[in-house]
Image 1 (cartoon, rainbow, N blue to C red):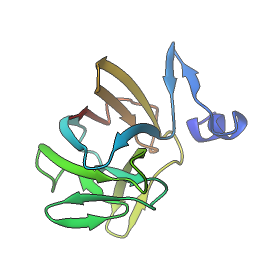
Image 2: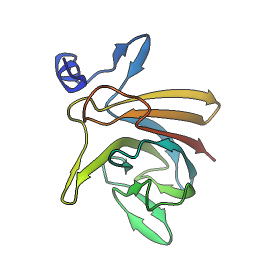
Image 3: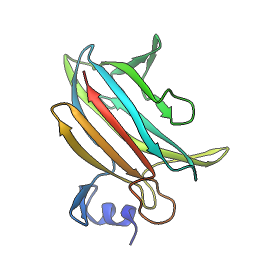
Image 4: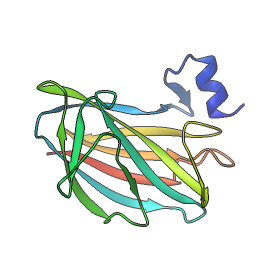
Length: 151
């Protein structure tokens, strides 16, 4: 059974895989003007890997390089290995949601299918490691690994 099938069976809630909680996406509370730092740690080169974000279900926005974006995508091969963006939720605080995406040919980007899932590990206060399995092939939480720091 694929992770997608397990998520369907579990109504989208977290599932336990070998003692780790696996989610489809991860939410964090952020404040207006709060900076978020991303550090790409490693990725497998089989397919193009990235992260997509939304803030308050796209009602807020993220500012990066003076651009206001509702659902930015940061690809490992084009984004800097470390970068910072600023959050502007609809109210004073909001929900930053993130999920992994991948591209395996020129015109198709996928998320949340097959064996896609994320393990979120809190390293310290406001510091998280995300280990992502893309949806292609076997479950492998080393497909994309990144750190997120709430500044």
